[in-house]
Amino acid sequence: MNLAHLLARTARVLPEQPAVALGTRELYSYGELFRRAAKIAGGLRGLMGLQTGDRVALFMTNCPQYLELLYGIWHAGLVAVPINHKLHAREVAFIVDDSAAALLFVADDPGEDERIWREKNSDLRVVPVDAATYRRLTSADPIAIVPRTPDDLAWLFYTSGTTGQPKGVMLSQRNLLAMTLAYFPDVDQVTPSDSILYAAPMSHGAGMYNFAHVLVGARHVIPESGGFDAHEIVLLSQRFRQVSLFAAPTMVRRLVDQVSERSADCSGIKTIVYGGGPMYLEDIRRSLDVLGDRLVQIYGQGESPMTITALSRQHLANRAHPRHRERIASVGVAHSVVEVVVADADDQLLPTGAIGEVLVRGETVMQGYWRNPQATATTLRNGWLHTGDIGSLDADGFLTLKDRSKDVIISGGTNIYPREVEEVLLRHAAVAEVSVVGRPSAEWGEEVVAFVVCQAGVSVPIAELDRLCLDSIARFKRPKDYIFVSALPKNHYGKVLKTALRRHWTQYGEN
Image 1 (tube, one colour):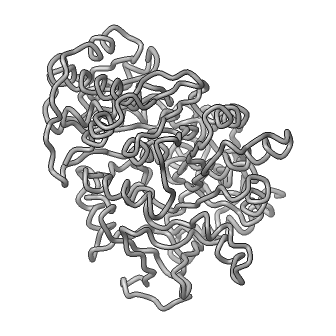
Image 2 (tube, one colour):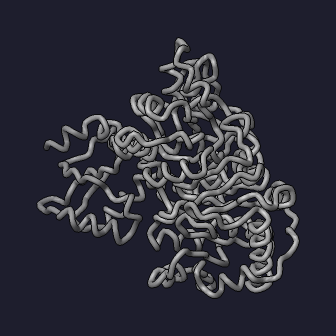
Image 3 (spheres, one colour):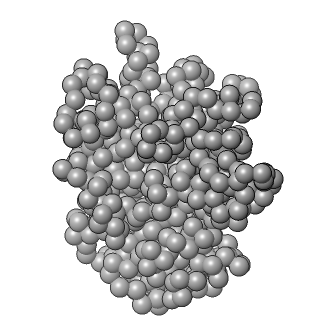
């Protein structure tokens, strides 16, 4: 089993079918896309000397090269390590070092960042996709697809943990194929006349939806902007028709505003799959009113990619159902390839309606964390993936999330882990204590707020804390607000009560 066979199959059956477009410009057919991937595979093995199982990292905005590189990597029997293009250079350096990546593809000239990336991984080779080296790869002699087994590693996805240290989620060929096959019964049907538009990062969930669309020969559309622009999405949907996309809730809200305020024609949008963070009930209602019955919700984690639960188009559209309000506030029912339960602290299953941790098992659950057996044992204990999310199941199997026990902040569909930000702020000599929490935001879902206790008799300018963050972590993780307090609320064991901070942040802000 090798995921590269998905592209090879479609290229044989539908060689002239349009495969990749940049904006409105058609670039490659499926036959051409397969040939480019086969040449890249030959270049990776021949010119670059890579061996089966080697890791290849991608640090790029959305671009046409993303797809041909992914399939070239798998064609060559290698492992893809897609990296969030918004990360700080030092965060990228950690990932390429931890994964022992042999090669890093980038969209632009890396400049000074390359030195940072190579500090701990001196053998790392960095290849901009507009450079001569890349052109040599795409002109290399093609090779046959390298055989892989179902349990061989295919995608190494880095997601931060509560300690702030990124962990590599190991996703096998089997995991990703199971995820792909679940798309059709649980999320949406796809035809060769459809297009998938990459408005969210291809390094994450949006990119993982490529498989289902490759499998049936649908078109892959990369916006000229390389990301999310509501006006651009509307125009592209009018051009291609039957367009689907994955979007974080903040993106859905912006698209709704675009359609509502400008009376834009959204008839070309077939499906919007939303997920990656909480979407408030009133936002869902307004989205349905403005966009019509085009929405599907999914709940997943990197550890079970895009496949824990789904709230179907039919459930969202069934306004006559007596529990419609409760259902659209849920995250839907278990995907067809997994079991989902709610359990107590001892992993004992809880009855209907009881609140506990959400546990998952099935074909999409990761193999474990890369070179991190302790974290693997903790998260996959007793045969279940422990999500760290708190929720309840109703009698019909609909899951409603209540809280996130890991304190992750989800802003604009991107996970931000408080301790990572806290550790940076604590580097400032004037900061005695700090606690970072998420504050509700109409624009982003949540935004980062830091509660700061200064050393006795001193203060610290906010600009210095901002600069500390910008020098160490990605810009989007920087606190939007700093609230200076005399002390943090704690329990008898000295643990900071973040629930109290979330409940009373306005009170602290007024102080």
